[in-house]
Image 1 (tube, helix red, strand yellow):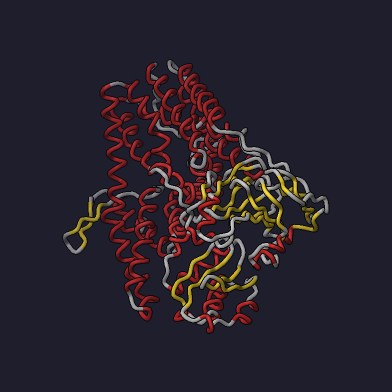
Image 2 (cartoon, one colour):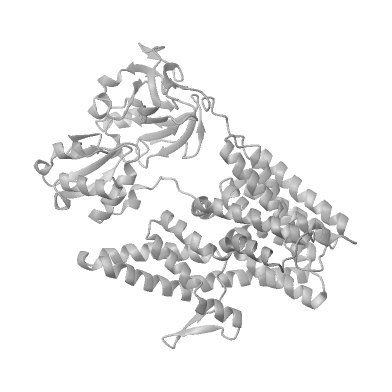
Length: 609
């Protein structure tokens, strides 16, 4: 059954939308503030396949779903006209750069396979052309190039669909905005070069630009669309929303993109290009330092396209160019940093992605490395920037130049044969080695999860304190094992440690609950206190974040026991395995009585398969 269908059934059986004052969710439960509890059809609610159980407590109805509760809250929020995003804030304040890179990483994560696959094909073909193995004029080359280049030419379409998921707006409207930017009217005007701008309503200029392969314009366009869509949907009467919300949203977002967002993004690129030209007029070495430093972030944002006309103009004016060698160094630095990440990750899937991205980088296609790898490892991104800057300054000092336009890949090295060849080779080595070494030093090695290939999981005590059987927990959602089996601990000092080795998958905004997934797929919930979601994070200090690796000696939280007690809340810490279908049985090797030290082995779960 679809999430939307379950949501509608739940709303119906809690008395309908008119009976709901407010709704939100915690780590495992939907929570409703109702006008009249008597209108709730508990029997019908509990017959819904996804509903694990129900409970009415503290003037709120709790509908137990499980750790995927957010997937069901989203359509409920939409039905009720609530802002689901307010329930998804992780509470972590990030800097603008970090937030931007995290957003781009999230946008590009799902489309990395397409970029990586196309990049590998494109790089190989470019290499074969550079080595004169094949000609780029044959039908075979043109056909294969269509397969490889389509992703990059129409990258805004891929970015739009993915960004819509991140910004929680309509994917098809997002793709429609991308189609607007690359509609033949615009691309033909660019190709003909006879028109600088269209006139909207005869007055407002719509500049003519080539948006193929760009990233930043469409990301900001979809972000704008998300706000426009929500605002329009909120102000329109329910009866008009189906038709007029998408109509108005597309029209307004399209105009904003064509007249403001798109042109500003392109002008930023042109400003970057002008700055590069100015630096060269002062000192090629200074240009090398600066261009090398900004090149990775320029590729990352799509502003690097603005540098190509400078290189082409240099070929026309002086017969050679010193900018393209810097692009070469940047690509090699990105490759070196990516290669170092290969030594840091442990899973076969991640190693495979890193390796293919590094090879693609060697072949001159760095998008898979940047978007798929370095956006997640920011210290590696910094290392690539440093390596690019140092190598570019080095080759600029010795006057390395190239005499024809060629893709900046390892296969382009023969184009440098001549007076500056040795310095070009040394520059490549500096870029690769420096970025590799810096990344290796800065990025910590991921710890192998000991249970990745085992059929058991050890549950350790999360705190120093006394053991409490799950059946004695004063919350029937846990005591009846609706959520799964496990244990509870009454902590003596409030320090909370991970019960298993694994990866943090969830930190709830109110900080009272943390999800951890072990290497062999067991999902463990650490729930601190009873009904502490209402404290809105007060009384909890959580130093870890989603994606962190933890072991049984990793401190994941500190509870202020006095404050929590002062609010009338129980402070016992509950640990349950939420996907009990993975558990065959508990081994019986239990040490449960009395006081326990944090990290002590309490239970061992034997797994299926």
